[in-house]
Each structure stands twice: as structure tokens, then as C-alpha cells.
Amino acid sequence: MSEACHARDMTHLLVIHHSPTGSVQKLLDAALRGAHHPDIEGVEVTSLPALAWARGEADETTIQNAAGYLFLTPANFGYMSGALKHVFDSTFLKIGGTLSDDGSAGEGSRSMRGRPYGLIVHGRYDTTGAVRSVEGIVGALGWRLGGEVLESMGDVTDEHLAAAEDLGATIAIQLVE
Image 1 (spheres, rainbow, N blue to C red):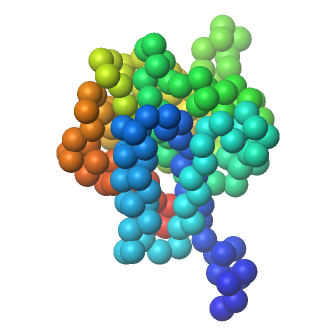
Image 2 (tube, rainbow, N blue to C red):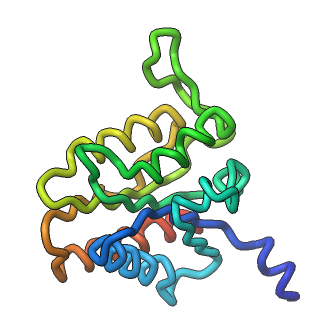
């Protein structure tokens, strides 16, 4: 089979991250190790910094072309990073996000509904608001949580890294089942 033909047969996991600290970078590296596990075949993994959307290097088609997602963000002032928020702000309606008349989350696009996502949040003191903010947006897209949210607090431990690696593998394997 030609390489081009083989690439068409692959499903796509998109990892969107804002990793300005060593802690988030370690979690990203672990998640990517899991997503690239040698036992997982047929999944192309693309890792992009959230700032790629601000620089015009990625757009809504980047998201639409993926079958699943993994988001990594620090918890900044009780919220996801501004860079990740920009990804959602600049693509939400274009990728099928909907809001009800009262401003609450709608049901999302039928074409993208049910896509799995994973979330890793690192914070020093609290991650609750950051997790809630991402969950609210992906809920309005109709995506489903594909693995337990990893909330890493304080120093990144071996347990956090193992959980990040497991989550990367968990989301990737769902794309080929």
C-alpha cells in the first residue's frame, strides 16, 4: 500500500496544548507517548500549540479534520489558558457549536457530535474553574469525555505522568475501535 493511501486510512487525534511551563510540557510529553503507543495502529497524532490559531497556522478545518481531541492547559486565574480559550472563541460556531436563546450550551453539530476528547489541566492551587470552562464549551459541541479528566496540582509527579500517558493512549485507542 502506498504511503499516501495508508495516510488516508488513518484516523486523526489532535492534541491542542498551551504548555508555557515545564510542568505542562512534561504532561504533554507523557500524553504524546501514550497516544503514540506502539500497540495503537491507524492513528495519526498531531500536536499543535494553541497559539497556532492566533498566528493563523491552524483554523477550524484543523479541528474538523480530527476524529478526537486531547486538550492540555494550565489553570490560569481559575480558567483555561487564554491561548486555549482563543482556539474555542475563533472556531466554536464554525465547528458546529451552538448556544440556546438564553446563552446556555446547545446540542452541537450532528456531524461532530460524540467525538471523544480528553483534558489535562495543571494548576498550583486549583483546577476546578479551568476544567469547568473547557467542559462547558465541549459540551456545547456535543463531544463526549473519552477518559477521566487529569487534574494535576502542584509539582508533577510520576503518578500524574502515568495518568497523562494513559489518557493519551485511551483517547487514541477509541479512534480505532
